[in-house]
Image (tube, rainbow, N blue to C red; front, side, top):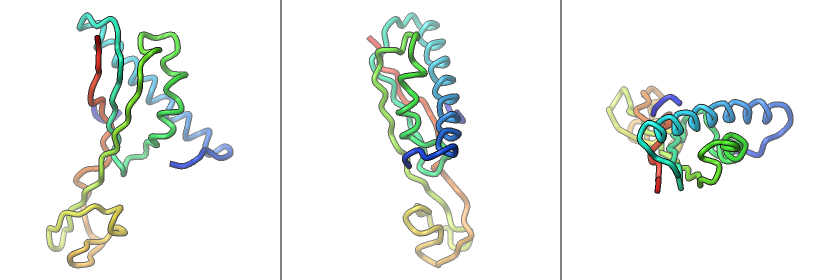
Length: 130
């Protein structure tokens, strides 16, 4: 499924955390529908992948998870989050690099003109059921 930090401070933190709560609730509904459609009765672990350049904060996802799964078939599940690195490609020399590790400029030619290849993903990677 595609498409779908920092300590939280003041109103800004609450607003960000509410964003992640909505995302987690949508993930829970998606996983429940998948489980029910495939005869799965018990889920042990849910594994999510989050790109390092996405707007989704893994710590907030982790913090929201208990509230989102309360009263659902996922209430006793473990949540694992894997962080995916970002990758960009320089439009000047075609070098592929991690923009976060190179201050958003190409390590080969120094250009700041690049396009994002990956790093904004948000996916359900795995549902461990028994």
